[in-house]
Length: 138
Image (cartoon, rainbow, N blue to C red):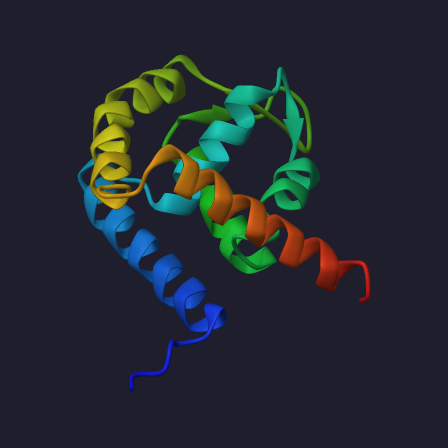
């Protein structure tokens, strides 16, 4: 009888697989998975602070990794600073998000092959509850 691997094993392995696939896919556009996430956070806000980006993406990376991603999107010209510690998407940043959009859609199709909408919703719901259970006791 084969034992089922624990959820932590699959969470870590899945995250590494997602990051590797996305980093390889996005490399031709000069961005990483984390930089793409930063662009999306900045896009969703009129102007966002560095601290807001860090707070929203804290589960995805540590401060040093987030600072590297912030630096990448700033030096790439995809995000600008209209004021100190403020971030805003540039036209080039909006274009970059559109440009990689088809690749992100392909990634989603590949990663969700054979997974129904109900299975996906169940998986996310279970992970949310597990996280809430643990964080409420921390």
